[in-house]
Length: 107
Image (cartoon, rainbow, N blue to C red; front, side, top):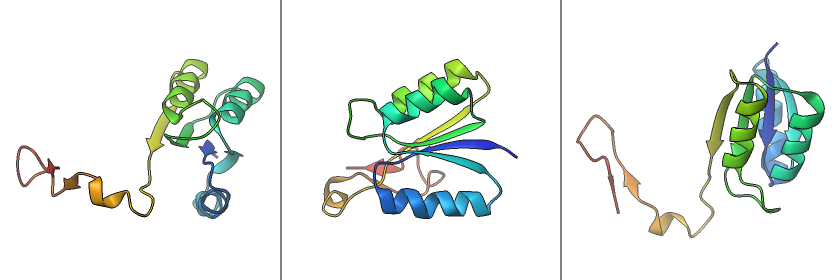
């Protein structure tokens, strides 16, 4: 079973997503922020996958977690992600089908 470190500061989202990942067959270890994720990487060794929020409180970003995970285990696949909160979507770039044009995103 593949081991997956899931890092998300939103407790409800973390719980629901971890349940779905578990149902999909992953052994899921949860972290509530980047600092805890780095500690888990140190304590438990490498993971096959890391799925992480990019922007989290505590001073350690998801990108830093991804880099650390790949140092601990070079074959680790890191998937940093971001979700838009209410109100943020208005200023976000609009992305169309990537095959439709050279530049699929516009401001």
